[in-house]
Image (cartoon, rainbow, N blue to C red; front, side, top):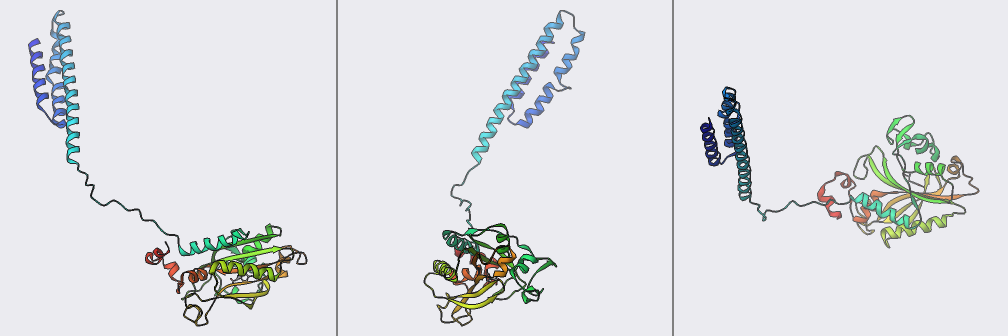
Length: 338
Ligand code: DAH
């Protein structure tokens, strides 16, 4: 029996030494130590031995098993190292291959123009405020003194959610919300999205406006004209500006402001409909009715308001003559605003 065990140790050594693959090594492990192995067979025969032989053979069996285990483990480590080295040798990194470029996006020209306009007014002490795009009829029309029968309330001019709720058609309702929550004196602007059911070369169903409102004691039309002229100069440089009398239900007196066309420099083109001028805002002194509706005393405070089209300003700044370009999001267009 001893001889058999020694022989087993020797065949184990030879077969383990010979192999070079981890799969084959696993097969050898099963053959040498598994349930049907010779070693297991020999262990089962131990019960037939004499009491003197039992401990001697038992110890030898353990030794042989231990020897085989160590041999197997050492070999497994060797194979693993060798396989890793082979893998590394075969894995060639081609450092001449071009890398992945990170493409940097650009700020959308509307966002960029909005930020530009915001900065101009913030420098003049205006607060920037926000308001809901889904708005109550009460704020979008009623509190702004817009009569029940005014055409801008028609379903052809306003997106209604129900009889009392609309997608705001202007940023002016934010004036009302702000006045209800704040006491004069203050000056604020509110840039944001507005909605009207129009679609053609110069209208899209969603566009952007920036509302402005300044209320305080003794604020006059002269103050108003000075502030707007100054801000327009910062926006457009020395281009000519004109104030035209106009009518808005929520301001009195009211005006529309035109700026010399940037595309044709006043000569007349498609952008300015051959007039040389482009209208960029509506404005006026806040109507006493509007002040009363929010609980202010028109004998105590006065002020002015304005609403500017942000797309118009962006078109004039960049000499763009088709409004739709802003919303088609063609990257060839957008890339030009780096
Ligand atoms: N909300 C007006 C519009 O969308 C623009 C406007 C006119 C705003 C006069 C004002 C204003 O604040 O005073 O056409």
